[in-house]
Length: 357
Image 1 (cartoon, rainbow, N blue to C red):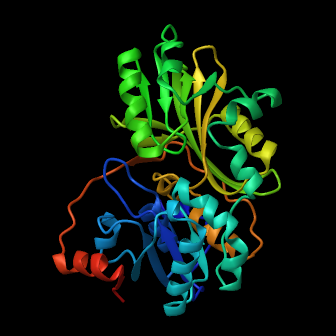
Image 2: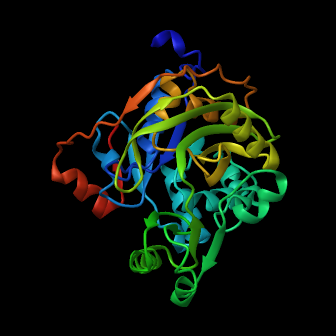
Image 3: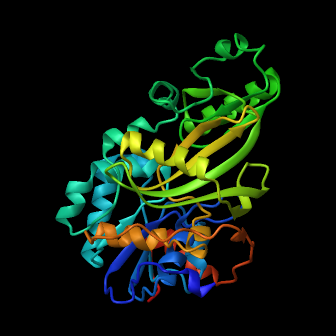
């Protein structure tokens, strides 16, 4: 497949890149895939993993990151977040940071000026643009502009579920994470309390669209265009709805739909669109995730190394659109045990950092 990778070359860069989201497993985060794509572009510089939990499995992959630093959770606020990054920067200068978790992206957007003073660059959307893709706003912003979105309702009380008891099945979603198909009121009530306990209110009720699901990873240029776009159809789906296998497809109508979404709010940086092709032959925008998906290595393997492109754009380099992806490229996720000494976990837990190399 080497001949497909007409991608940005990072082999000449002598910089430090920080990446978040190193958890793998049944609900994987994107960080490990992002790092591997960056390495595949010839990058031999230093990579730092920023983690929230000492059990993030990417910490224990010997050849993945050179250093690990534990971060305060985004809920701790911008001040604590920035203080920790300032401390890390005092030990190791960071040149580029790629955040990969929904809840943290808004902090990195709001702290861009402060991070720039530390010499840290990123490639992210504006705050206004980021807020427009919130699950609570999709159904009001996009339909008047010609993009279909399933009927959506925000609920903050169980009584509102009762008033919708004739609308099952439906999707029950958290504002940031988690989505479940509820076939009846009892299931909806269970999911309501589960999501509330983890992510708070409001809870999102969304009409269930029957059809085929597609996911599209995109890097927007901030002016309404795209630097890269790779659509995939899930072939293997976990009980959490996560894709553990998928294939790149060729669908000009889907590409046109995705390009229109990006053009409407001028997204800058990586994102993932979740789209349903309904049995009515209409495309419906389900979600916009404001970061790379965990399956982003499929983009690299199909001819578009999007994480490498984001590194160069963060550094301010001009970059032409990435080459077309190759349809039929397949990914299957493979789970594997990592064997290490418990002292590694102890060091991360006790010191909140690990210097491997």
